[in-house]
Length: 313
Length: 257
Image 1 (cartoon, each protein chain N blue to C red):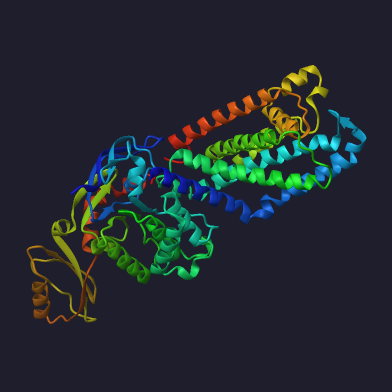
Image 2 (cartoon, chains in turn brown, blue):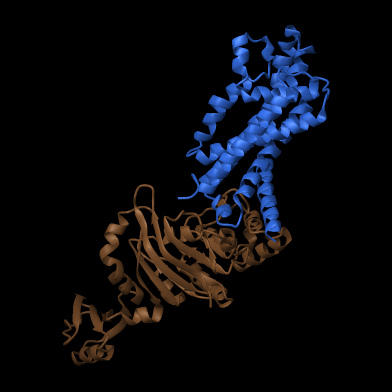
């Protein structure tokens, strides 16, 4: 099957000489739910910018559903819906006008655009704001407006650049459901996010970019399987005596909190057994951090400080 | 398929642009009418009556075409300059840049919007002028062609200004320091034949002289320069400015990183 997105040897050097992309290769299959992760300044937004023609590439090839952006840019663009990181709509225009105009840029007849605008505004719970100026919306509403706008021409591939940034958890979950539904309808979704839990829950395949280089590109299951150690936090009954665990690396945080590193070859049962033998009661247990987060930190941790100091994104 | 998509895209940009200046009509349509009324009262009725005839017509009739043209020039330029720069500043220009809209459609859409405002304001000023003077028409086709080509020229100029502009100050520098002096010295209020020979020569490098005179010919049948020269100047300006605008947008100057 033809790929939804194919990137080969993509490079981008900005005017000041900063090299944001150092020859990345990436393939996204049709129908995929794909995560593009990386620390700030890693090159995620630059990559998205090149795909959507907002950033001029320095070298390399990009094709969207087989259409090369150098030779068939307009055809390639017609397949893409973009939800950018920053709000980029006219703040003074009402929602309906923003959506209908956007559809018009893709050649969607006004009568069809009106129907679609109603459909997406209702689905995204914005219908009662249809005549309000965009500047009157809350942050979460503005994010949903950008999703509705990106869908107006019914794209085959939706690119979302941190769509849930600054959105409360309830709204974030409803957006996740909406995105899952779109993906089930066959829309290829590419997502960048700093909420790694979001990527782990939604995405089947993942690429991690750091300082302009793809440092990992695999399916989510394989990536998570690479995690050698998971850290668990045990909430103990207050005033428990200090726990001593054989063959485990553990840290006593306070008299009722214990952190334990569990290797792949070990089981959590062993921890419980040892704690029980020492008459220590466990009230609850949780992962110290999201599994993907631990892997992410291990993959990009060393380069993060230098990447953060570069401000091209 | 592609042609129909481009036509819909062009209509969308035009609709958005026309809706924008109509929505803020108090800022866009009323001020020119008031300003031009004041010109008519001061230069036409009060001072004009003491000036007497110019080019064989009373002074009020002489300045009417120039004043209409002045409002067309100012409004077609400022409409595109402020609208396109505002779209850049709010980043909603990206809505068009990510869509399969050819660059010529973007240019045509914005220029069309500027022309629409220039022609609408020109029509309002003409109606206002009717309260002060009997408007006569010598050649309607010259009037239509001149107003269309002039508004397109200055709309293109406004677009180029907006592409380069980095702040709101940058879109007022050209109108203030270049456009206004050229307009005032472009034969709106006087015939350049009244100037000393040296300044007549200097005036001939002012493109607005050709536009004002062609327009005046359409109304009164008199002109300081030949009609052929006027339309040639307009043609050269339109082709040159369109080419520059297309190159800038295609390269993404000020629009793409």
